[in-house]
Length: 299
Ligand code: AMP
View 1 (cartoon, rainbow, N blue to C red):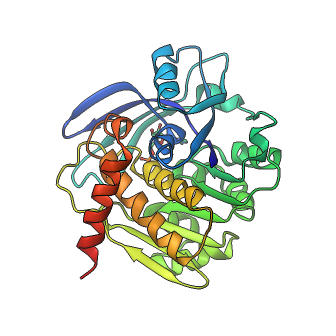
View 2 (view 1 turned 90 degrees about the vertical axis):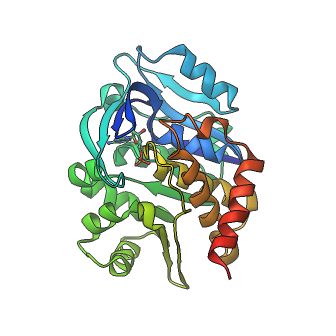
């Protein structure tokens, strides 16, 4: 069971009410991998610059991530700086430095081209499209984006959405791309752009799943410990797509279980800065919290 994830491998600087960390290992593909690795073999497709520390590569390798298609370009690694204030639900982007990402043309090995489950994590939609065209026939394609790309590459993003099965967005992004304030209307509008399934993340308020056959919504896992939410969305997507890959089937039941695993995985991510918590997360821990979560929503 393999999954391929394309996205950013970044050096993140993050400030929350609990402190500030500079140039931590981060990026959409890295956060995704930390939860997806618990369910499937993760193949990471990304670019790093000359300044990317070898210790981060060793770390990813030690977590069992296949790094065949992690390439090093001439220039600086993608860097993101963000801050969280108040309810910790929304990141305020201070700066985004694309560095080597601006020249990235992803390529994967012949073997990886046949991987059936693909997640196009948050990155330039032109890069997402480039990879998707390079792949052989896929089984399940998920994609994510963010306001940065919705605002600067809207046309490319809309073109990509015609080719994906699941579009994952947070509530702000869903509203901004669809032009609808109500999230059900937003989900329907996004469905109209192409993806058969739409998943809207609402931070501490949980998640909404929409497809033609059913709508399903789950609350977030109840926790007081919120240190750094960076990567929660990607960790969610990793748990969700990872579970579907392991289950080997996409139906109402497996989607609901996958949503619960994504929710629980994300609840670990927010307990520490960067990948601090998710990098040591084990399947027994995840399952324990999954059962607790299940009991908290059923009566
Ligand atoms: P999330 O909190 O799940 O939305 O994602 C946070 C991660 O996204 C951070 O680790 C950043 O490095 C990464 N990121 C921030 N801005 C961008 C961007 N414009 N494109 C791709 N990745 C980004």
